[in-house]
Length: 76
Image (cartoon, rainbow, N blue to C red; front, side, top):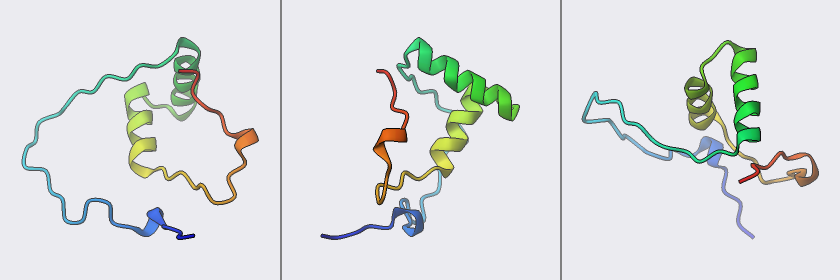
């Protein structure tokens, strides 16, 4: 069995954006999940978009010893 430590792995190497353009993405999120995201963003004093970007850029999901019973999964 092999183990990859993604938290210390360079995912994009020397990737540099060639544009200053801001791109838009669309996410399909259940209403209950969206309420939870909004509540968490409000708690941190962030916008919904900022919270999702911060978590996506900085977050790492550790599968090793993951307690799946306490992991909140999206509804959809």
